[in-house]
Amino acid sequence: MQFLLRQHLNVRIRLGAFFFLGIAQFTTIPFMTIYFAHNFGAGPTGILLALTMLVAMVAGIVGGVVSDHIGRRRVLYGCEFVLTSAYAAMAIANSPVLHAPWVTFLAFMVSNAVWGIYGPVDEAMMLDVTAVKDRGQMYTVFYWMANLTIAIGSAVGGLMFVHYRFWLFASAAVLFGATCLSTVWFIGETHHPLPDQTPPSFSGFVTNYRSVLKDRTFLRYLAAGTIMMAIETELQNGIGVHLVDHFVKTTVSIGSGAIVHLGGLSMLGFLRTENTVLVVALALFAGRFSRRVPDKWILGGAIGLFAMGYGLLNLATAPSMLFLAMMTATLGEVLSVPVRQSFLADLTPEHARSSYLAVHNLTFNVGGMMSALVVSLITIVPPIGMGLLTVMGGLAAIGCYWSILPAIYQRRQRILPEVESS
Image (cartoon, rainbow, N blue to C red; front, top):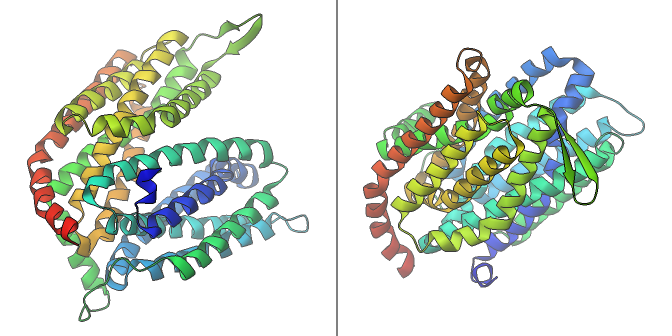
């Protein structure tokens, strides 16, 4: 609590907005694929969702440069206004008097595109006003809250999405509208471009991102993050297929006579729940632990646990081993996040922070695509081979992170006196 009280007003307002908007978002996002598949068919839905992902990637790249040229605040409240309108359109398209799946899809695509802009700019604003020594803890708080909002939002959406979609979309629109007003009234600008800075043009975009991609330290960081994301998203791809194909249906007795029948899909659901519960329970304590142990050993040990846990998930079939593997992987994930995220803050220069964060966001998409390819790979590679590939990926990520440590420490020594004197 003391950490939050000493933070800039922007951070405290954005944290509250992040919590309520996250819950609103996850009451609908996890179920939209099912909604579109029901209305358009599975085949067209896959193409439509890929299109929304592509649009979001392009929008994020454009938004990063715009934010670095005109400031954060105007981009944020512009995005919030569009998101309010998009969710209002989805509410109307799913109201008692109208059923319009195509309107829902178009509004959903617009909202995804705007989220592609909104996330990096919002994160850049937080970094602008957070001291170097507090960035790891700030990321820990946001990471903890993100998992909490996923848990709450998904639970509410699971109960209400089928019969109360209108109210879920309408509530999200109201929350986005309130957030937009809070940004206009209370949020201060944190990035002031040079007065003679020219407006962004196509050549400016190219030059801007060329400079980002010339930063070799940042590229190694991106490579490590992409590997981590590919391993993490295995749970919904390769590991999910492994459980469906190889998990033997099991009957488990709980307490005094309660019986649970576990199949591959239900086991996957329990593993997801275990991951979320452990993250919410452990994340805030992990931040304290990470500040007391050198970064090198936190990364080596935590990512080692993360990779070994997911490696075991690729080949285990017994419920006890699967739960143990998920616990190991989650512990590694939670311990490594504060350090990895603080590295990101150290690597993003103030004059191009949104651009760097927009490029970083691509690791989520690329990592997800790599993980999706695993579904094809498991047809020719046995489970033990997939487990070994996962562990090797973890070792590669450790190597990438360790290779940038000297550059990280050098940048911290340069930045810290500037922040403390400001």
